View 1 (cartoon, helix red, strand yellow):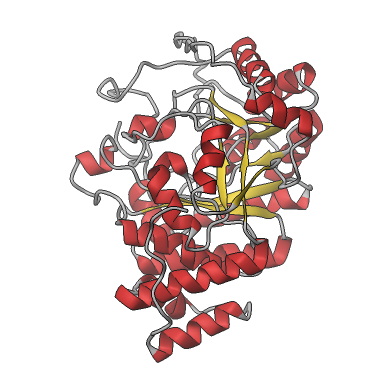
View 2 (cartoon, helix red, strand yellow):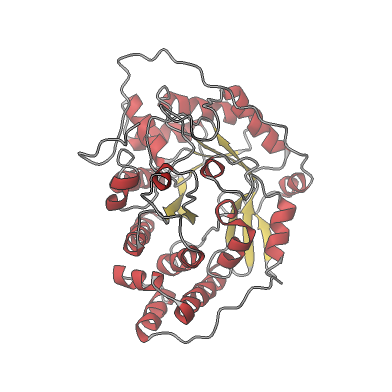
Amino acid sequence: HVALPAWRGQDRAPLLAATLDRAAAGETLGEDEVVRLFEARGDDAHAVAAAADRLRRQAVGETVTYVVNRNINYTNICYFRCQFCAFSKGKLSENLRGSPYDLGNEEIVRRAEEAWARGATEVCLQGGIHPEYTGATYLAITQAIRAALPGMHIHAFSPLEVWQGAKTLGLSPEAFLRELKAAGLGTLPGTAAEVLDDEVRRVICPDKVTTAQWLEVVGAAHAVGLRTTATIMFGHVDGYRHWARHLLRLRALQAATGGLTEFVPLPFVASEAPIYLKGRARRGPTLREAVLMHAVARLALHPLVPNIQASWVKMGPEGVLRCLQAGANDLGGTLMNESITRAAGAEHGQELPPPAMEALIRRLGRTPRQRTTLYGDAPAERVAAALAAAPLAPIVNTPSVKYARSDSRTLFRPGLAGAPPAAE
């Protein structure tokens, strides 16, 4: 077993004890109560983690899940200017890592086919909002993968991509999601959430989908039978009250739709992020805050969201072991490739193969289980292929070409009223 300190005894302040008891009973906590959990220090913080770990055991037992997947970021060209993003490329972005690229469908399919040969059950697709992409682009990507790999689960397109794609086709998000589902889309990643509070969004992503728009798109996905994840990207200009509001908004959404498969905390990686380089954000959450985010999420979302995921890409192996002792039960995907967090300066690698994933889980004395996107058991044939996977072929990102953009093309921006996009 891993040599990490067990959470200390049950000593806790009376107000904290009452909050933990209410969470264990599955009651909806108030905003002040959730803030109090994030404020916990010392023995109180240990009590919060221990309470979350008990609820994890009650909800999902001693199994830790993961999915064999491939992450494909099909373009890093984006006309939005999120201040935390070191991945996207646009004007005056040459100081950021890498060159602008835009993958063709042939290369996207090649990577998906290679992933299938290596045991993947899921391909995860996201990218920048390329000024030439329309809803037809996303439909074509989905159709190409479905035609080549009918057995591969397609987990793709953030709520921002769905919103923008729908606008370019003159459709509502729900109507566009129905078209994507018919084309082969299986689930959506609940990214682009950042922090679901417009006070924060006005600073870090003013032209991106608002809190209400994000909830609308995700709710629409659930309405058409597409389940989603949900994320939070935290530790920049936000505070505990913003985090509390985020969790409670997700709880309300889940109570209404039941469509969330898991919650995924994503600690802000600062080193290459524009907002940090400009001195306007902190370096990311502390380890205490990152662990507590997983613990408080387990408590605040119980029993509606059964799965809390710890990101090995963001937190590294030792960090996720802490989170698995504080309410988390899932380690997400093996990924094979990862571009966005790496561009921001993270150094935990791009792939955690199944043998390494399972060895990490066993360090805690827990049982690893390779899952599907929707938390079923991966087929035995997929498990065997994943455990015997050959090394990945080197990838080549197709350089971007200059598009002859029509002057009539509208670059749709949702965002907050009166909040212009950040300067390019």
